[in-house]
Length: 120
Image 1 (cartoon, rainbow, N blue to C red):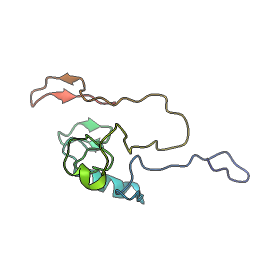
Image 2: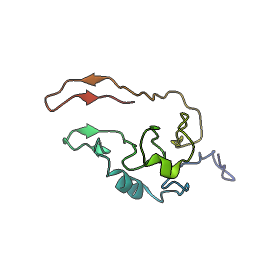
Image 3: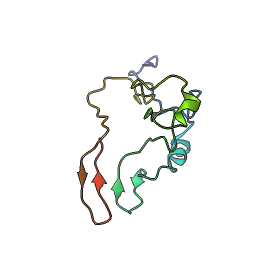
């Protein structure tokens, strides 16, 4: 954390994923959201179905250096070592992680256009 001379501590803030496989940083929110627009599964703030969508999806479609499955051929380009469970997704601010969930299979609910999957 950084601390101004006469003020409260200000947490260091960073985006949840690097911009590229070399660790580059997004310069602003619009740049990061434009990068994630290639995701077919959902966008923040309004989903493709016109309903509220309060999260972002990070997959090997747009960000293969952070969404490792160990099975995609394009991962071998950025990662020459076999997948061992590491993920380059990071905390966005200084502090403590109080909850997280990473699953291979998520809860789903039947819906008229297909199953809805729920992620944390």
